[in-house]
Structure formats: structure tokens, C-alpha cells
Image 1: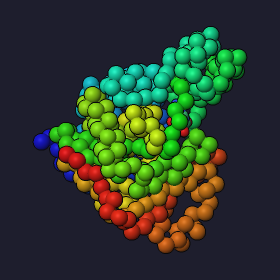
Image 2 (image 1 turned 45 degrees about the horizontal axis):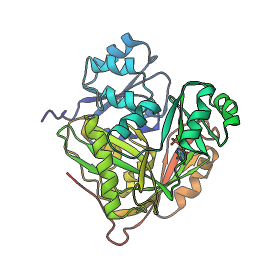
Image 3 (image 1 turned 90 degrees about the vertical axis):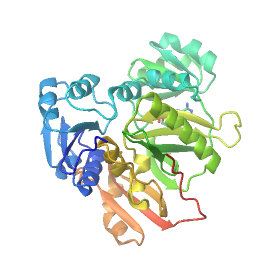
Image 4 (image 1 turned 30 degrees about the horizontal axis):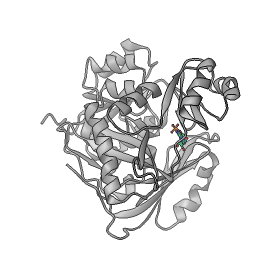
Length: 368
Ligand code: AMP
């Protein structure tokens, strides 16, 4: 049904490393990629074509969209007007509603909670004066997060007492925010679910994610969840995907707690795109997240999400990437570098996937 044949052009809004790896996966299927971005980026090296233009230049975006067969995006902060302009000309997958929800933490948390899925308790904050009452209700410590444009722990401030309200609100740039109650957890996991145009779906084994300085450091499989909890996590992600009429790879980040029997899984946030915690799938699975996203948006059958190996993905942040030679020499390590020329601190320069033989029948959670 409606599958784009080889030779078709996938348009990607955004030109970062995710766009780069999507373009490489598309090439394997004989599909072309055209990137639209407001600056040159890692995807430009490998895409068939690219256009540099502002995301508020709707005329330019429309002209670009006219040259492609389907449009997707590799970052969730694509302005809604840009996405909608593209969507008026060509199918946009995932659709604009997924962007709308993922761009605003208040909308996102309310949307997920209204689906009956556990999230951290939260309150809307429009000024520092709203904080004391919210803190009283949610308990301390709490985390103040900007509603928009926060990532990798940016735009966040922790606080425990009402007299810290002004300081915390200043720290996040005095922007509209939410205050979240603190969730105690044993681990952080993420569901990487793919849903096709024909509504078939599958999810990858759920990785164990560790962060350093607010940035994802490692993701490994097998993760900590039992088969039963994995299925519950996937059911939550599927509910979100269905409510968004989602097509493509959806990442759902969750906190996991061993001792909390009523809510062992609490959703933290969603990303309507391929996700860093799924980079191990490129090498540990015959069909990784990038190919499955391309398959979904091109209307192709979803590929298997089974894996053939255990894996640990380590992000190469800033100067970590200087060790490319040692990593390349290490047995069982697959190095991915994004072609960025300046290794600024905190910048994702690449990742390394360490593979090991599959342990104790933990492969996989495929569903359709
Ligand atoms: P986020 O930007 O929402 O992904 O938050 C960055 C990191 O802060 C998460 O990966 C968690 O480690 C931590 N964090 C965020 N929200 C909470 C919360 N409500 N309770 C406890 N830890 C949190």
C-alpha cells in the first residue's frame, strides 16, 4: 500500500547527525534524501541534496517540499509553521501533532497523563510567584524545566525550598516552565517503537540508559526490565503512538523503579524521532532504528527489531572523539563519527557500539 518505490526522495527537516544516519539508511534501500536546514551540518555530507534556508522562510520550505515525496524531521523543535507548510504539500510523517506535543513539556505531560500513563506530578509555572504553591503541592525536591527548547538537561533547575524560587526561575531564563516532583528511580530506560503506515508496529529491546552531566553517556542491551515490564512499557509507548496517529520511530523515555509496585514505570518525555538511546540498533540488529524510520515514512513494511548481539553504545562527547584511533583498533567495537570539525565540550561527535554475543535468550520483543 502506497509504498514509495526506490528512487523516491525523502525530505528531512534538520541536518544533524540523526539526519546523517537516516540518509545513510535510506541509501541502503535505494531511496534518496534531501535535507532542509538553516545551517550546514553532518547530514549534508551524505544526502543526495540539501537546501539551506531559515525555518521561518515558508516560501523556501514549500519550494523544497515540492521536490520531495515525503517529509520527516530529525529534531523536535522544527517550528510548527514550517512543518505545516511542508505538510500542506506532501505527507508529513510523523504528523504535526507529534511535534506540537513534544515541543512543550506542559502539553506533553498533560497529553500523556490524560492517556492514563504515569508521569511525574507537575504544575504549570508562569512566574517565580507560582513556585511556592506548586512546591507545596508536589513536595521537594522538585525540578523546574522550561516548557520549550530544553534538551540534555539544559533549561532545568533543581530546588527544595520556596526561597529558592527566584534563583531557580532566573536560572532557567525566566521562561514559561513546569515544576516537576522528584521521581525516585533505579534506572532510566527508553522504548524505541516503530509504527508503519499500515499501523503494524514493533519495538526494540529496551536499553538501560546512563547520563553524565545531563547528557546520555551509555545505552546498553539487555536492559534491566523483565519481559513483562518490557511489554508494559511498550504498551504505554504504543498508546502514545496510536493517540498521535504516529508513523515512524518514536522514543519514549521512562524512569524505572524496582520497589514501586503501583507505578514501576513513569514516562519522562517523548521524542518524535530516532533517538540517541537507539544508536546501538545500527550494529546489533539487522535492521536498525534509522532504517525502520525510513521504511515507516516511505510506507514500506516495518523490518524486524530483533537483535543478534548484546550491545553497549557509548557516546563520544567533545574530546572523547580524539580517541578514534584506539577505538577503531579495539575488537568488537564499531565506531561512528559524525564528521563535525569542532569538538566543543558537550558536543556529540560520534558514538561507539561494543558488541558481545547474545546472552541468555534475551532477544527480542517483536510485536505486530
Ligand atoms: P529531561 O531533560 O527531562 O530528560 O531530564 C534530564 C534528566 O534529569 C533525566 O534524564 C533524569 O535523570 C533527571 N530528571 C528529570 N526529571 C526528573 C524527575 N521528575 N525526577 C527525577 N529525576 C528527573
